[in-house]
Length: 87
Image 1 (tube, rainbow, N blue to C red):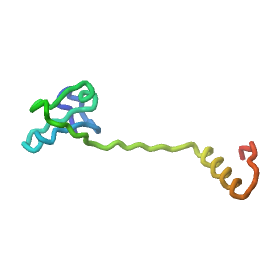
Image 2 (cartoon, helix red, strand yellow):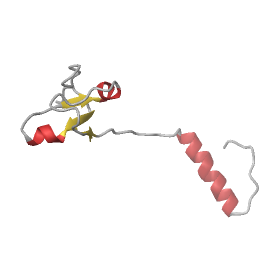
Image 3 (cartoon, rainbow, N blue to C red):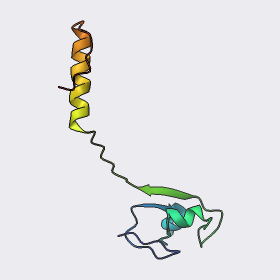
């Protein structure tokens, strides 16, 4: 579990980490909100903070929209005119 070393927010999934401090066995992780506020590494403000983490996004279009789209493509390929029929 990652915790922001500035504000204390826990279970951060997208965060910034100071690699220079980590190489010295000092962990410094910063949440996105604190980074946006201009917070820098406590070890040295010139240290670059690298973004770490994964964000998983699932997009599911409505089934009816997919069905209508596929039917319209098939009609076009077969040379049929499109109808306003929603079947």
